[in-house]
Picture 1: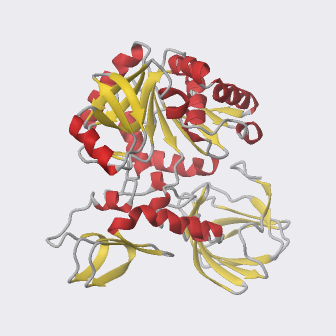
Picture 2: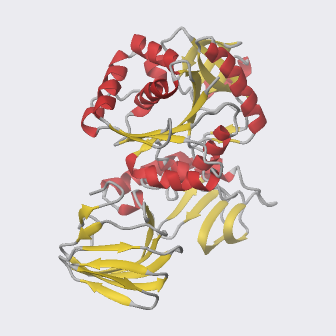
Picture 3: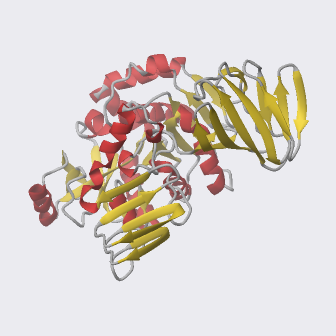
Length: 472
């Protein structure tokens, strides 16, 4: 029986700022072992038997970043398809487009295993066993959801009341008293947001219970661009104009809570939705005072703190119950009891159009990365790294000039009508208004320093004429 894991990678994770940001969201967060949550989801899915390929539904702007993450953990080159959304439209739309695509590629009988990209599962063996149980039910035409055996009266999760594999009802996030009651009864499970069903069964149930989503998705797919990635793998870029007409509704509301074909598999798989910095801190070993540290920190008379810093030394004296997250351009200090409120800071940053809600100082692009080293009035200094064989777009700026200095590697430069090579310790100047392009013709990374000067240095001062990555 063919199984197609479907990885949904769409959440921003505002409560995990300043590491999680709009263009570097929660699935790309690296844990202490160096793997991102997205990579862990891919590895977990790829380890299952009978997997034909992995289908990922993600934002168009995160496609190349996702491919980079997969490349590190997919040496066997398991086939991968992509559905690229222009913007988020909730899980019903994502699953509908995935179900239609799987049915077209592999037939309506193919089984889909829907997995959020930003969850952590520490017990692979128990996960494999739960999936095997779900497959049996899915082959009987059931829409299977996974229920996590609760170990605490958690108020941040939805619950499922179950009797064996039968779902009695879905329950919204409860009050603390209700959560305690659910835990004591032994009849309730946490709703993990993972599912298993055949593509045909989901399409049939969606047509019955929320036909507007399916009709809108079908209309969008007809207008969307489609490219082959192999014999059966595809890359679909959803048409933005028609996708915005798709109802914004979760799969739970659209189908799972309405359908009589729903079943549940209860499981204890070491699951966490990594929904806050408290959840991250629980993954780190603590000292005798209850302090956990990732990075370099020096503490005195402090207890029950979690400190994460990748670049700078952090010190704390006489503090209790704090979480301190230090990045190259932002510092978060929050009381452990208020970690859910971090999203309020993100809302303030967004309301003030501050780049810190969206970007890190190091920004990933399809061709590599750039890091803002320093900026001030009328100047900005960047470190640019271009992957072998990669190329920036042929572009022009109205308001700024650029000096390029090659630190290592070889640069191929288009500057106006000229095309030439710039080697290590050499430089070139790009006047404002000149068409230009930077490429790496070598087999090692190209590293260079870019000094921008001009009256306006915003990233939106760019006119693209040609681009290998479809951004022109």
